[in-house]
Image 1 (cartoon, rainbow, N blue to C red):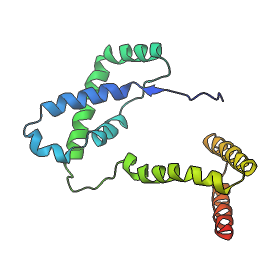
Image 2: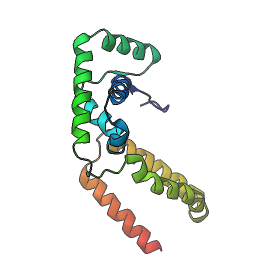
Image 3: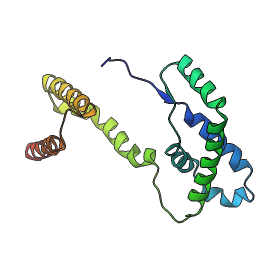
Length: 166
């Protein structure tokens, strides 16, 4: 696996978002309903029912855009699925959902604040070993080379080691 960050995009997302915007503009009483319609939920509903068109370079994105634009059946399906998504999401205004970004934002900020403190507590050689271990572990986890039991075992080992050191 290369060390540079892999970047890829599902080109279908752009077409779905454009269709959502178009259909939202045509909804009667949209201002009254806007608080109940979350475009991210509509997009998720729709994207889970449409084929993916991934690309990893600018040329690939362009090729995928042409494939989607020139496929009349796919264009109809996008319109239909977005319409279904708007109906499904709008039907349940009391359903609660917490956006993914907000759910982890506080934890991420806390982690960022504690990194400099960690450097003060843990000697540099041990810190380097911890970073190496975690990178390797996460890579193996991503490549499905780690079992669920091993993840649970590691969690408890780290938890109890941390508790003992406190």
